[in-house]
Image (cartoon, rainbow, N blue to C red; front, side, top):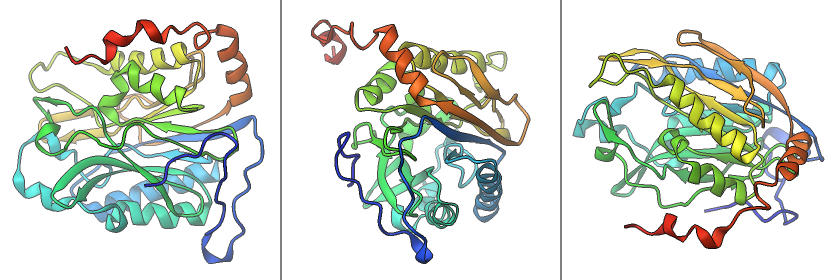
Length: 311
């Protein structure tokens, strides 16, 4: 499975479809990103069509990386445990959401981190295909942290990811993309590991909303704060995309956002809007601030061994 080469290592720019020249990878200080927010139904083809429309809109606004929500192929099926739903999983090469985004990414020459329900032999994963502007899958990340609770019964469907965290080349030489999936976003270890792997932007596709066991509990504020904390402690921009709408007894609360390296919100939605958030982020500025804050200089890894002990 392809992984991101080390900084300065070889990069393959070939393979662009339809005779288009390979995408350029100059040094850029500014990168335009987008997060999508929308509702989904059980109609996979219509869901993919709706995402396609918003991706096109984002690209028309200059977005070079466009992030759809988690598992946008359908409703968030992990609300219940139903063995019949395993039949909706597909391998990466034949999953309709992945193949549709491959064609779209090649046409628009953009990056689309694409979440999907993956079947790999007898195993099932909550996965993400990083699709590049050549329309190829640069690699697959399998969700590391798998939740289990009322309305979010993912352990029934998904094995814990076995890929480790991943970072991929982005739309410039120094614009590596790190992506965690939903529950991963609550873990500071996820963000810090991707940063140590060279990420310059962190993306989190999500499906989160109400808590069936407590109708008065609204986690949207904590959800945002956790990721804004990652932005601040790693001095890195964060892009989060969530779904909206009511599915069964659950309401998905949106609040997708893009923040800069200080954790300041640049673009945001509330709980009901459908559409595209875009922002242009200055990565050189973020690198300068990251160096100045000294968080990575002052790390003490030798003191953190307790964190990796399963006790």
